[in-house]
Length: 333
Image (cartoon, rainbow, N blue to C red; front, top):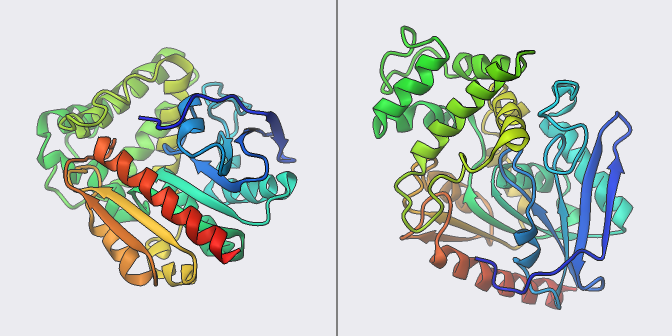
């Protein structure tokens, strides 16, 4: 839960990317504070008003943005006129850098959750000189083995839900058991991605409903978190979320497989805190553990009562980590 009071942005805008996309952004808190960029998950979730209250508004200049084609950015992915060929990890990284330049930020602290961690790592490894610190929760690098686990491997725990997910795609005869290791998982995700491009909105809606039903199965045991969080998205928000997710995961997130872990040493000197739930069935603690091993000075916190959607303990750890990072950033400056 947000620790700080609800606040309103003092500035908002639409970043013109130059290729027909407009990326929504807003800034809150102290205009002279430590800049922090909220990098939302999904991909395709968009930011929320609650994200404004994640950091001390007296200490931080809090910057939110909705990644391409979701939230308040336009065109919206619920509309088939939005060209997904212009939505890749490379495009998002350029948007972030363009936004930094437009807002006059020399360095910013990155706060990412889930997919937001992947995007933050990709940005920081490309632009380490632009990053003052990193606060990463529910850590994923979106490498192939993580995608395979999320959309197949974890089916060991939820075989009925997994069979429904695969069956809707018409691939039940191809993927017979969640323990199969072949064929590769991308064809299944590509089917969903194609269904979300169907001109019939009813086809898109049914595919989106099946996708979020599977996602909800994966987080269904998180009593301290937010079970049902994916199905809570409705209408245009759900269509955009699933269209963008399936687009990215069917293409291995437009990243060289495993590159973010192999090159994490580039973050040496950047203070970072990795916070992950021990009970995150969608992605094990191996990824943050591997990142921490290769990132000199990174702090790893495994939260025993949390899954992917967090817990009160995870929130407490996040607020405490934000305070430590603030002290390190301001003392270094």
